[in-house]
Length: 492
Image (cartoon, rainbow, N blue to C red; front, side, top):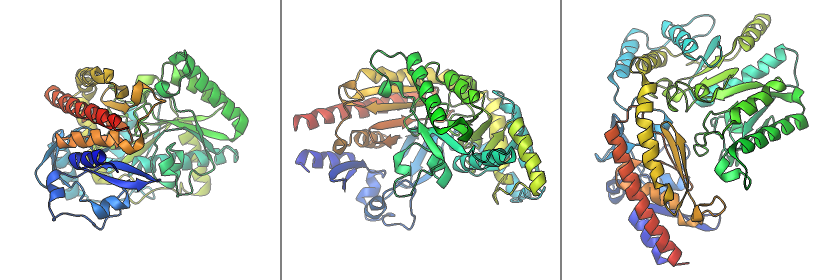
């Protein structure tokens, strides 16, 4: 590696590794203080999720110790604006006392009981009722509780298979998801996901999963093609895939209203209207993965409300409890619920569930979170700050190193590209996204880095002043990154 890259590595607190024959600059998620000290947790005992082995063996992790509002603090006391709300999830920030009180009260009353064999708890019953009343895009009848979004989407597949078997349709088992989608990391939900790293060396995706086009207009539209025409082409491609496979073999289509981890990709104009028409034509269930979008993220209570999606099944998690306690849920429409109920009568039980399905503490916290969303009119709160967030960051779109800034509500992505074109990415060994992310961390803000994509989804409670701080740090990081790109170009 040349001296320039070596200096860049030292300056931004990044790390280099040989990956596929290239020297890649990777952001180091640790504070400067932790890195410079010999004390820390390098070589710790966790097999860390979505983390390379060398990172845990060679680097100190960034250890977060406490949180307050929109901020988190590491073990050295350094303060960071958490622009990703943890992992798209701490909607009410990191110090909502009502959620802590709800958990404490339930722990002191009934810390655990299950929901098997027609036994359950009051919080789980109350939460199911509340969710069914809150979701109005289409009528839902039953709620099945899980511990995460991954488990919710895993459960979706099992319920749909159970449903079609009950109807005497044993061949109607395939699922269609989309390229660049993210639906979780369990065996089934990772198969649904359209991101290759989730498949590599895991023998995934499973053969029952098919993937159709990613609806990213900027990256995939044809010359002169409008958003509406792009949506029409993708709907046609979906229909052709269904016909090729045989409609009698396709059970369900699953989609996030706004694609999250795949790059924050809002749908193009007319997309869901056209897709739903195709799905309905061939008697295919529509599953809305609302794990990131639900409870206000997009400026509507659910993503389905924003895009007029009428799903048969829905997955929720994350903001359901503001991430204070793990919980997820599946919402099931009357038609599917009734068939499942009838079939379980024939078989003796619906033999699916988890020890912690409807955990009373998780349900109590989720109930309180939903009360807060309604009492504080969280949708109005999001809509009051979202224009400042979106417009303030999109004002940087003219930067020569930014290909696209896209988003809606309180979710946004920046994609770096040379010449502002999706066809001319920066060399991966330059690590532009990692450099930008490290600059943000140096200035006290945490972002999501995925290659040369930077993603943000701040807490719903973020204030206008905090958005000003977010925009300021973003601007400083962008200016430094532009300068670094100039230096790197001058060396090539």
